[in-house]
Length: 392
Image 1 (cartoon, rainbow, N blue to C red):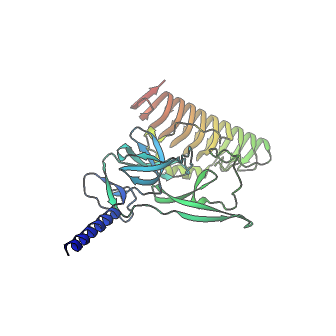
Image 2: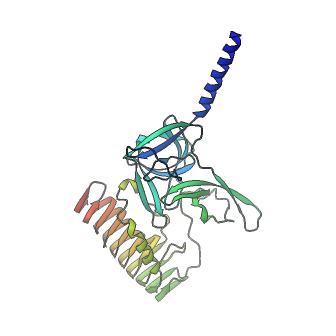
Image 3: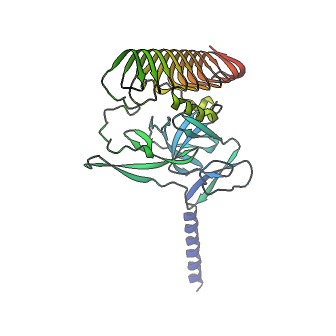
């Protein structure tokens, strides 16, 4: 009888041990703002005033304490670390330097979470983790987002391609992204029927501009139009919005650019955000620059087109967002460019990755500067100062 009771007790002990092991088979990680208790909202993945979880199978844009910027897809949370594969985000989510190896991060390495708010303007908000405490919890229900499958058919239904939709944390919540030929897009931009073999293409480059017959107009012409080159006076409603059709203007450009004015008003709320140089890339990509404006440009709304370089003098009522500026550029609210050479003046914000010359505005930000900044607050890779700053 004693032996039977002992065997029953042993079995119960083993069963209890197994159950506990199963219940604690996974780890979850969450962050709690301040020193208070952990309270979660329904959307417990969103950073905010309450605690939030880090979810598996979700893409996060992160800034580390060593100022490194990462875009990661979380694969697992275990051994007190976040395991991930790396990715890269650029306005749309562009997977660059893709690594199939799984890497690890400790929560103490994290400084901020970046949250993209506007894709077109490339505007980010941030959530600081410096005043948050992190907690690892054992659980039998790991926090993860399931993937979805979408099927895209060719126009003639002769073949189909299956894509995996993955969650991506943004300022608005969760977006879905998918990969196509080495580039990852937001799910609503899926283009059925364009699934040709691209093994010989450079996955890191933007798609080449559309080819159309060369059409040169001299003396005077208008935009938008089918012209590829205009020599003389250009009068238009919209100069360039990176529609994939290269345009070269040599002479004088007079344009309304109403869409640019609207986008300029929309971007006012973000103009003083993101002065942290760690959020800015270290490299310049000019492979997509196919349009140019050479001479004098006067635009009521402003110039927008990340395939465009402007050389000469430009005067913009609201905003200027082009790839490269050379010469004198005066803009009402903000200048945003990858590179400038010369003088850029704005009523509010100047922002550039690389600059050689002078920035004048309320807020001036340039990561790689050789020149002078004059304004209320000036930021470059050497220092941040009020009123005047420099680096040579």
